[in-house]
Length: 231
Image (cartoon, one colour):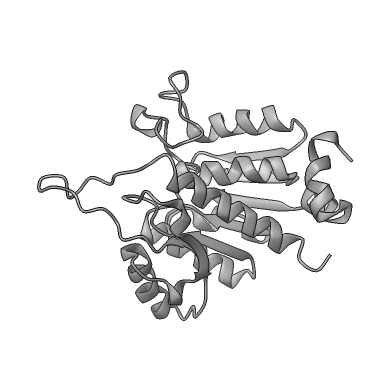
């Protein structure tokens, strides 16, 4: 047992740690939500992590994203997150994919090699592709709903998407999932009503340092708990 994982093993047991060490989790989107999830999973001892993101770090990311600071502006998010993972645990296998998942490339991904998938994207088309592929390949998946325009992390919870409320993204996703014949999907969402901006700022999504990171931790906790369930 590695000393870094000893405190966690006291809660979940050595068999659980061994299971996590042998697990492969993919995270799509390593911004505010996904980045926090990745770091938590690395600290939990996940043995292999695949990250997917095409974006670079911008100054506007600094208020909430683990990849963002004054020294990483302009760098690839997946490369920054790789370095952060390796600083936590050098033996974790990290696969970085600098790509935006779309209809032209999603079949290039070996979906059935994942034990769990976290969808932390904000693009509906990409989210649906990921969820559909996980469904068809019998891969467990959990999806992040809207974390923007919210301030209160205590309003976060995990439930089936068809039981969510106060979330415009979830409403769109429910409609599209019904068309795909997908009748259930675990999601992290906020019951908080999103902030309303003054006229002239309707197209800007506000973000706090609190809710995106808390949502990422919630997603990571769910994945780790599901992977070790029954041990």
